[in-house]
Structure formats: C-alpha cells, structure tokens
Image (tube, rainbow, N blue to C red; front, top):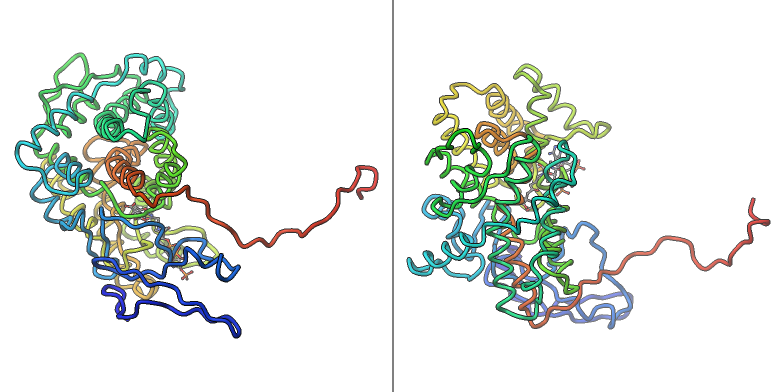
Length: 436
Ligand code: SDX
C-alpha cells in the first residue's frame, strides 16, 4: 500500500475473536486513505487508542497538504516554494481563506479591507497597562487576543457568514498591531499606530521599530524577508495549535477566544516555542567545538535535552520551509552587513554533523522551520521572547481559515474524544475517622 496514493480497497475488516466488522475506507485527492471508525464504538463497544494522534485524521480539510516523506507543503495545492517566491503574505491569506489566488481586483480589495481593520479599540491600550513590563509577550498576546471578544461583539455570532468573515479579517488585521504593542510594552516604548500607506510587513516593522523621536525607514529587503517568513508560517494542516483552535471552535466559542487558545498551545517549546528555544540552545552550545557534546546529550535517553528546531511529527525529510528560511537568513544577514554570525556558524555545523549521525538519520530527524528562524528574527532586531509571537502572528490566518472551514462543514459536531480508563473501579466513601 502506498500511503501517498491510497489503496484500491473500499473497506477494511476488523476481526476480534470470531466477530468481524467492515469499516469504510475514505479516499482524499492525495495522501493516505482513512478508515472511517465513526461507528466503531456503536458496532464493537471498543474505542481506538492513539494518544498523540500519530495515526488519526481528525477532520476532512481542503486547505493545506503535507507529504512528510517527500518534504512537500501545499497551500490550496500551490507549493510553498512558489508562494514564498512569487506572492506576498496577504495573497497567501486570501488563498487560505477563499481557496483561490486572488485576481488583481480581489487582491486590492482584500488589502484595503485588511488595512482598514489594523487599529484596535483605544481601550485596549489600558488593558495592556495591567501587565508587568517584564511579562512574556506571548502571555500578553494570549490575553489581548482573548480580550478582543470583549470589544468586537458585532462579529462573534458564528452562525452569521458575514460576521465570520469580518472576524477573520479583523484577526488577520489586528494581530500585527497587538504583537507590536506587546513588544513595545515590554521595552517601555509608546505604542505606534498602524499606517495605511504601508504594506502589511512594513507596517508591522514600523509599529515595532518606529519611535516618536525619529522616522523608521522600512528596508524593502527586510520587509520582504519578514513577509516571506509570515508566508512560511501561515498554515500547516492539523498541528497541535490548529487542532486546539478546531476543538475550541467545535463548541461554538467565538473566534477570538479560539485563536487565543491556539496561541496558548503554540507557546509550548515542542511546538511554536521551538524557535525561541532553538536560538537559546545555539547560544548555550556557544562554539562549534562544543557541538559533539550537545549531539551526545540529544542522543542520551537519560538527558531531557533535545536539539530544538530538529525533528517533526510529519516531516521525515527536510522541512521545505527550513530550506527557504535558511536562504532568507543569508539574505537578511547579507543586507544587514553581518559578515559572520557565530550562531549561524554553529547552526550550519550542527546541521551538518547531525545529518551525518546515525541516530538522527535513523529517526529521520531534519531541521524544521524553527531551526533557522531565530537567527533571522534576531538579526531583524527582535528579542528571542518575540519569536513565538511572530509565529503566532503568521499562523493566525491558518487558524482562522481552519476554524471557518470547520464551522462551515455541515457534518461538524462538538469534538469529544473518549479514553482508555486505567483508574480505580467502584469503591465506597470512607469516613475520615476510618482512614489510615
Ligand atoms: C513545529 O505539527 C506541526 O506541523 C508543527 C509545526 C507547524 O508549523 O505547526 O511544524 C511547527 O512545531 C515544528 C517542531 C518544533 N519543535 C521542535 O523543534 C522541538 C524539538 N523536536 C522534538 O521535540 C520532536 O521532534 C517533535 C515534538 C517535533 C516531534 O515529536 P514526535 O513526533 O512525538 O517524535 P518523538 O518525540 O516520538 O521522537 C521520535 C524519536 C525519539 O527517539 P526514540 O524514542 O525513538 O529513541 O526521535 C527522537 C525522540 O527521542 N527525537 C529527538 C528529537 N526529536 C525527536 N532526539 C533529539 N532531538 C530532537 N529534536
């Protein structure tokens, strides 16, 4: 059976003892077939068991396709390499939301709509001032995105398609503003308002790096680089944070609250927090000479250390995004005149050594998107604490697109997994006096 092209069979048979059940096999346009187990419990009284969802398709989707063995990533069928090379982030947002590349008129209209939703309610400023200045920007972002549902009541009725689209546009438009506010707040500088005459990426850089004392001149090469980084991070099928958004949305929760749940999940170091952790790891390694020591630690089962930015649940080949990110790293460092970045030297040597090491080769562990992104973002002027915030900024369109797809799926029901229970069976209450 070829997982990337499915089987010719239309049913799978499950046999337990002397009983058998036929389960339908469903086929996608590309990728592994699925065995529909929706009626399994009713037929057999048994659940399936797959805690990390390594073999479980949680939904049907038409947005993003990943072939982990080939290192392929398609957004609505278009290869990530072509989108990153030829389009801009808002074109990718349109594609992910509407399913087709926009015409020139559609793109201009979309850009206009997003641009005019970039401001946040002025009252949000006071909301920020409740945080300590040293709060992690991800904590501030989770809270402020969740707080949007306290401000935009006119786009929280998820049964209204118009409100769903307004909420989607608002999220895409306001997430850079909130991300920049989280950064400015953490460094004690005044918030910078969006500027409608700047493109999405330049506007974000301006809101982050402009100060009242002097104009910020967005470097087009750097704006293009951050725009491309947003494209690379925009969506990625049913990853942990997207699955969180879908599960939260399946209860009917408003989109802002669902996106806040996705941001919370992304924060973890095994997921979107890996870019921050990878740069910290490169700093901890400190020199090319110490790489073997850390490679050995990563292989030592008794050591919790892992190579951050390496490995992936789906990619068992080079993450196509990591290749583009590595190219962008060299482009940004070149534009900034950074001749040799010791962390980049360590990253390149670490990758070289790891990709020749049996442990990594055997487990098909390759650099993922987080391996090089930190070096690029640091060169652009962002502190490590902002790296996952930028990941969340870019992934917001993926989350909102997947949320919309789920809400608009007529077969959509509340997500409610079951369990394998291994706790105590029935036992009666013991009064305090009789407890030992
Ligand atoms: C992202 O899902 C997505 O699509 C996520 C993402 C997206 O765009 O949304 O692509 C973004 O989250 C990328 C991944 C960022 N995380 C990291 O870089 C953290 C380091 N990587 C690992 O924690 C790990 O590789 C995961 C979490 C990414 C994947 O974990 P899995 O699929 O559960 O794999 P596993 O932990 O079962 O590992 C398989 C084997 C194990 O060894 P054995 O028990 O078989 O001997 O590989 C080893 C692991 O110990 N291993 C590593 C390793 N990653 C896996 N060993 C050392 N260093 C690593 N980085």
